[in-house]
Image 1 (cartoon, one colour):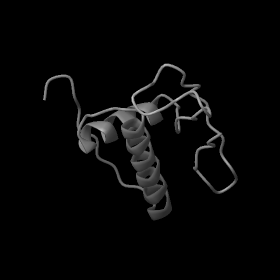
Image 2: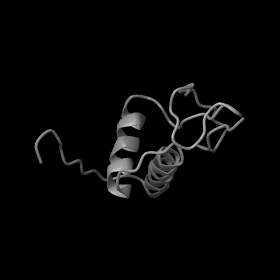
Image 3: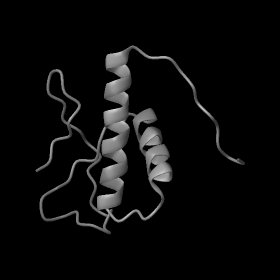
Length: 88
């Protein structure tokens, strides 16, 4: 694959579960925002977002809808022991 790289690692079980949850949520959020790429592509995009420090997309009520990515704030809110994004 030109322009891609394989990544492999061994994680503590709880960290692996948290990583999987974060990647799954990111892929789901991209789909909600209208990204029509395959699940694998959306998951890879979500990993890239995590690598750049963006844990999840924060939706602004009434601003972001499926198919629109023009008003993303890019910020996240994290509760102690949780990686769930804050949705307003």
